[in-house]
Image 1: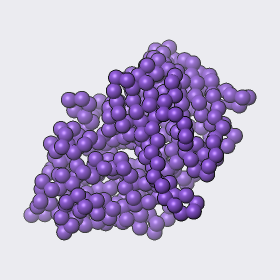
Image 2 (image 1 turned 90 degrees about the vertical axis):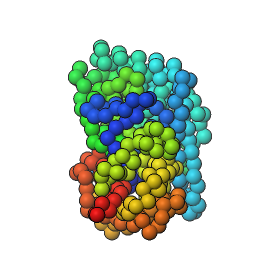
Image 3 (image 1 turned 90 degrees about the horizontal axis):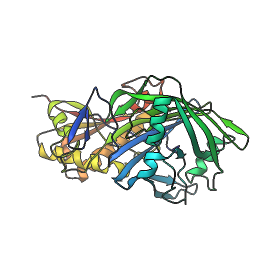
Image 4 (image 1 turned 45 degrees about the horizontal axis):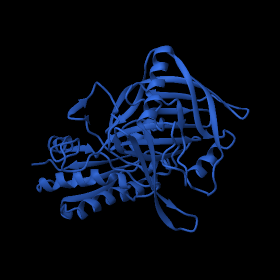
Length: 377
């Protein structure tokens, strides 16, 4: 999937573990479980100064398969604002056996494309590549003649239907050793094992040879990165957010509250913003509700919500955006019943980076919202 949003569109989290069933996974055993409420933050980098981001959630995971959901706000040329949600269902059989990948979100397409995966390759293909070094592969995608224009059309921006192209060929492993790959898991930078692949694909007389990185995990061989001379598509973040009141990662007895009790400052998990705006995306709802519950249980806490951006764009616009986003989180918490006098909002733009802004993953880490709790006696 090649999303439409800029990197400035999202801020988020940090907790040190991932709930996987009833057990808690913690470093140094990185894994991205295929579970409901998993949010995948993905960036499309075009040129030297532009990143576009989206957040896709695993809305439902069952024995039948996985339903992926993408919600976004679209501002049309006439100024009208509409909210749209698109879904994709991948059957369990295709997750297991398919060697075909469907890359696009169609504006008016069907929810399911039988015989294809999305976001992952099939587990059987993963094992073949892992053990023998390669395997046949095909991808329904876009022509290489106009990648940027086709991408915009693919997601309903600018109208029209993009020309779909069926690319056929092979995936070949660069090395039989797993390659470390940077990923934020619930806001914590980890190096996950990956298969680094070379694709050799053709269609209608065109040749396409992107490099591809796949998460080295049999039960969830997630697409981590696709890179060619024109663009880089990268999964930069994997966050788990469960409804408040459960015993999961962000539940009433979860790690978020424990971390807030112990720490005076932390990144806030699961908070996302719409493209180039301070409007909170729907995928933030669970995280906001869980944070509000934790704050209401500790009525003595006084805190500041802080917004931070990457360095893309001017210093003034980044400063204003960080302030507006921090205030948006504060307003939602107050609306959820947290006393307004207990919360302040502040923005710092790009002045307090956690990592370098020279890389896609570094910029993703720098776009965040933090909570600074007043711990003075």
